[in-house]
Length: 178
Ligand code: 5GP
Image 1 (cartoon, protein in one colour):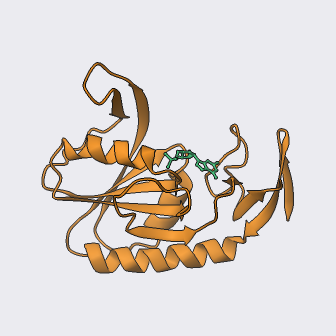
Image 2 (cartoon, protein in one colour):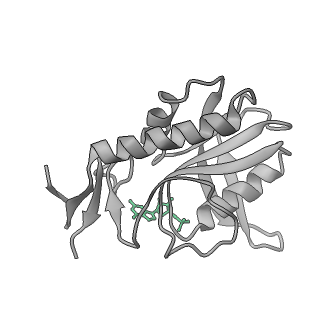
């Protein structure tokens, strides 16, 4: 399938499934080297990361744990104005090596808020592993250490990413047709 219509928008195949798989293979090898013997805790950010998290986990033959959170963001009364809650985080993070698993990092605002919220739990280390990264859209300074695929600043779906609920189940990555 090289073209799909999701609601009102059309998409074309941009990165075939085999290429995505090869990129996840490479990332799993990179994470193995870094985290073997450290029993890392992977934290997948729902909904989008379910797909990438599963693909990554089945390639990681090291001792590790995985859990999932949902992110709720709202305006708080503190000085920063914005509060990020990680819903469903029941694990103790103190002293753990934590890897946040994201489907995509765009401006980086979401991942910045997640990292700020995690830091309050005093983990030994925190890094980010993302399926897709848009370097041209990125506005934060924290390093995105583990990236499977870098893409231009286009809207994409597939491999867990949706357009208004549709498209998450598409293998590969599809790019919007302008
Ligand atoms: P941020 O700008 O905070 O890095 O990304 C915010 C959120 O926007 C991501 O978690 C993702 O849900 C959504 N997003 C950003 N770019 C895309 C894209 O190309 N496709 C889809 N489906 N969602 C995106």
